[in-house]
Image 1 (tube, helix red, strand yellow):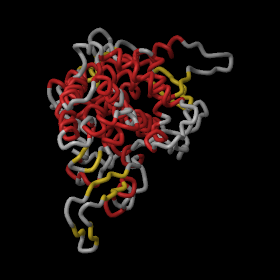
Image 2: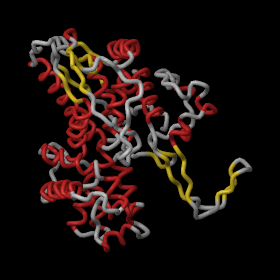
Image 3: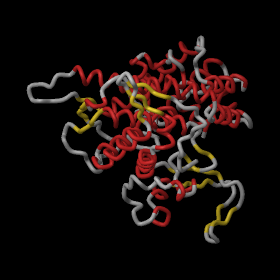
Image 4: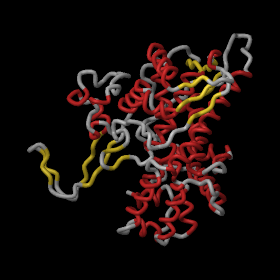
Length: 412
């Protein structure tokens, strides 16, 4: 699979593709990513850069809303929310991973990534669905931006970026091909974080009673009122004490997850005295079917229950909750991504009211099935009106925490 992705998305040469198929490159690559994203000082640095930029993106949103004057029809400041989420996550995540001088500071490069992203499914098949070549042209802009970035990798680039580079170079991959493979990093960095943020905000703000309770929880547990009239979001408290927010975030993942994990059968195995799995074959584990199984989640499995994950003592086994993958192979960036989403959702919940310009929250918006991701984007972006909550206006800061304070995810 890694060979296929390296070729189809990363334009790997035949030599590079052969190296990825060797005994050590794939395992060394995976290990380097896992260790560089493990809780510790390196993840702390990523989280701090990401958190500061996430706060900046929310500040910028409110500055625009404050400057907006209602039109003669009484209209309010509006954003296309998926578009905003893509920009905010791109900027925050890139600061964390690449450092302050990341390639996506150029909005043309940012827009090119999302153009390329729209063609990922077509490219992975190897069929000529990208007839006009728009996706490949956009990808070339990402390659070119990474060529410029990698001429002299900045000192504040994350250990994740540096370790990926080290493993690829030590494996004998050419510098040009290393750069192209590094240019695929944003696919894993952004693709699922954006729709997960989008739907977490959607599920929260579309339920006024839940939103009120989450705000009360945040105010009590994670917001510090400063002497100068400003506010601070305590990220350690956000992770550990805001159980309802974390629960509804994970419930959003449960009901929105559509990915099927794939595992190779290493030896002949009999499951439940019924199902014989022959060694050498592959097993698909459909996350959506498992997440909606009444035997696992009870009679309310098909419903959104914001409180489902509140009681951590009743946490189900990791194989029941597959939003981050199937154990033992979980997304190594899950703590980074979860922290980012929780920071953004908390800041939005406390500082603004969001409402669809149509005045209606659709129950089941149409989904875009074209993207090769685990949480689908909406098929149509939604215009949101942004209302500043005056009682929470003022200067905001973050009190970051060490990454050893983990988000208590059901998957581990």
